[in-house]
Length: 289
Length: 289
Image 1 (tube, rainbow over the protein chains, first blue to last red):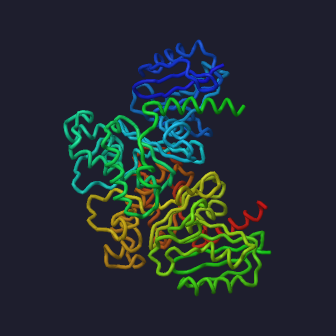
Image 2: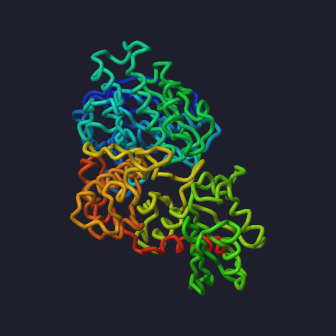
Image 3: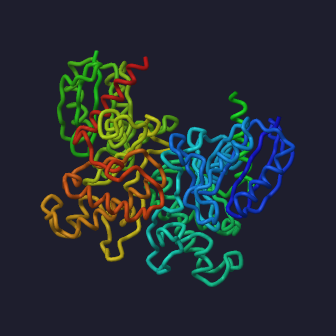
């Protein structure tokens, strides 16, 4: 018997199969097209492997409260065809004897980093991805953090930089954190794609100002032992130090944290945090039985 | 044997003694002056009552991590004489056989409201006080929420209202939430004390804009089942409806919550949430034995 992981993204579905000791047997990446086509490809990939449990870390927002009828669904996503899609229902229908563990992509990544990555040995962390969007996953007391919903820290409001007049890109809130600081804002502000921006472009200071400020708010609200940054924008190696500096400056000594270069780091499992977390969640569900 | 509660504020110390069924036997309010004088008065009040446990909800910031040497201390408070005061140490010294439960004033109030007040029957809530300062306590899965520190949501940054040029009152951050929206900002902006401001003064819309926005950020980060507002500024009975409206407007439909008039309410135990929470924490410590 095997365990599975599905990191369900709006662009691609990363699928992996492992044995119960977490050795990966097979892995693939499936483009996210229509739900029917995508699910058919996922089922075909997993068909040779009878699985006891599958961990799914999904793009969102998703229904996460087991007491509500929207549990297991993708909710109001802009991704065409996936609005209100009952993902867990479709998986249970195909695999009636397989346990499905359902959380957000960023919660899965936070879990992967806590157990096997940058927060190994800690009992709490926040993982923030800065890419096409901004999202954060939270682990606390070793467990996924979810309430009536899952954290949607990307859409929290932040204090605008006094020199910044950019309207923001968020269709809901315009100038929330994601609207002001996700990947599209870099190109929106400069006309240059994020990955082509020179290291000395002043946009990086503004980017660090917003991410650093969001990490202050996260620290003052969740008080995690560690914060881990990942995602496409974090591939800029000079950005971490700027964010650490912006964090220290804006915290202004108010709350004590571990030294900033230990407290805020980049991911230890680049591009693998999410799928690793999905497999771990499946493995642990099996171990509990 | 008795249980005790101390709601330790920067202005006064509310002390209460109860029997183990939570019936209050004696209660007093002691002005907060120097630590030596204040503690002597506290010890004199409790002297007739041998206590098994005392719950303390303190003004802060406070050291909350039992693994650190600052546990039980008041940290960098502006309150003269109380900086780095080892409160738990002083209480343990006086009462070596009494269990001391130590948390923030707002965590204690959140706990009181969850168990016996506006969030009764829920397993999670956030309690926010809006008064001389702004603070928030968090209960989750029925327990106090604390990490490497306790939540300090009053000092999170918020998006400034486009028409607002007030510099803010926070000595650390200037225009954080507390700097822009605590009681002193009302008088600072208008020249009129908060309690004397007319109900139709436009300042209340600005006040509601900031508090409502902070509740959006709290919802997107902590996803509690309920948010409860208390403190002096909330004595304005017209303010709640404005805050609810500002919350709905700024959330912009992004995350589903319970209906706003159930989700965001004022305290059910006005001015008693904190001391009630302190006594409950003591009672439960005794019950665990």
